[in-house]
Length: 150
Image (cartoon, rainbow, N blue to C red; front, top):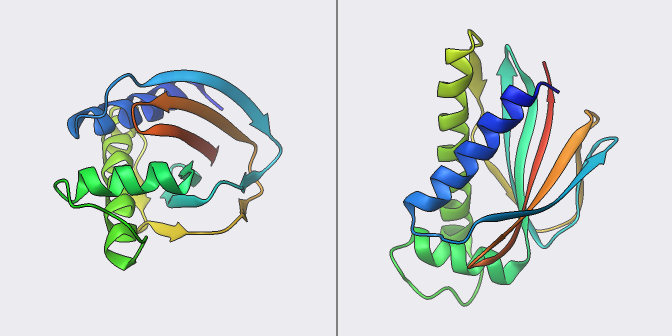
């Protein structure tokens, strides 16, 4: 994976979270996986097609997801992770992917972004080599997974 694309994705992640007031976003760990396997409570996945094939995913504990959904829903208290909360967290990933696509176009690469999927279970997403980058935030841990093929 090209470091320029990874850096663009990490920048889109931190900028998008920052737009919603999430502070103290610090990278804490990075791990290479043979494939994209997500095993935290909630994951939201966006698929890229075109000049870049593969997925990016945000994976997190359910408490972090509830806090994130609450911010996305203008401070509404989230007690159960219903369809509205799923949609809010999915929208964050969609916004991040849009920012990535804009940056990729500056590299001369065009991509199509599929709508986000939100899952509440462990899952194997694709067979691409994946970087799992852990971030600690004021909301809790968020794992950014990048499994793309350039």
